[in-house]
Each structure stands twice: as C-alpha cells, then as structure tokens.
Amino acid sequence: QQYKPCSLFKHVCWWYYFQHQSNSRVIQRLLEHCYDVQKEPLLNELIGSILALSKDSYGNYVVQHVLKHGPNQARNRIIKEVANNVLAMSKHKFSSNVVEKCFMFGNDEERDHLLSQVVGTTQENSPLVQMVRDQYGNYVIQKLLEVTNVAQRNRLINSVMEMVPNLRKLMFGKHIIAKIEKITGKTVQY
Image (cartoon, rainbow, N blue to C red; front, side):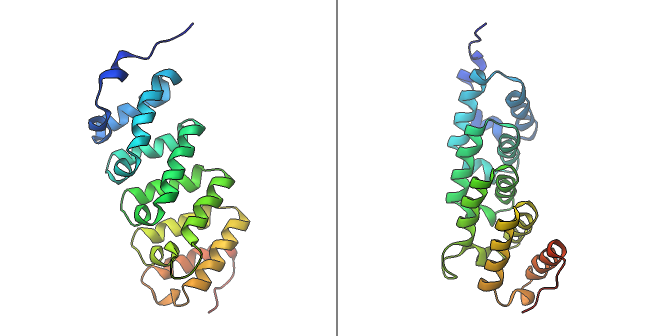
C-alpha cells in the first residue's frame, strides 16, 4: 500500500519546531516512526539549516538524532556540511556535540574526511591547533581519540604531538595528554 505524505509535513514551518525543547523531542519521534516518504520533506528542511540548528540549544539534539538514527543519505549530507565547517562548529557549545556525533556515527571513509579537515595540511592552517586550545574543541579531540580506528587515532596523535609542542602547558592540553596516555597505555614524552 502506498502512503501519501502527511499533510502536516507540507504546511508546517519546521524551523520553529526544531528550536524548542518539547517540539524537538516530537520531531525526533516523527523521524523514528514516520514512513520515509513522510520524513523526506522534514529531513530536507533540517539539512538545509544544519549550521543554525547545530548551534541551537535544542536543534542540535535533532541533528544528533538524525546522525544516529537517520538514513545514510541524510547522515552523509550532514557530515559533509560539518566537515566544511569543522573548526567553527567544534568551538561552539552545542555544535561541538554534533561534530562528536559525526565521528561516532560516520563510517571510516567519512571519519577519514572529517579527520583530514581537523588536521589540515600545515601547522598554520590546522584547525587542530585551535581546537586543542578551545574549551569545547578540546572535547572534540578527546572524543576523536576514543572513537576513531587505530590508524586514524595514530594519525591524530602524531599530528597533535607535531603541531602542538607545548601541549602540556596549555589549559586543556593536560586533558588531551591524559586521554592519549589512557588509550595508548604509554606516557607521553616531549
């Protein structure tokens, strides 16, 4: 049997609903229980506003929910948008949680792309250098150390050690060193 999209999806200004606590929970339930054809307009609007929603105190939960439970196509689109804005999002209280979820729920290829965006190509253009110094960005780095595969983790650790030589002296650097030591079982030497 074919189902037509619910008329509710055609006439609602979703932006309003994404930004309120109880409504964001309703949106999450709709994404869980509606048919794909019904979810499509909602997902399209959500993905079209990913940066703003990720910075919203309630909208970020909707984005995280799509990353965890949504269709692969939606997750891929979100991760591409996050990769293009990884530094700004990592330094924001709410959107940093979205960045973490991208690494948690992305596949290895998506994580490789995200990690490349974090590491950059030189110390001068590396978001990593700013992230380890940031109150929210350092948590993203710690999460990366937990959820990446061994090759990705080694690349991240090598990049941190190379690009941030005074890590131990930084306010948040001590937390990153502790995480590296816990994961590797080795003392970090400078």
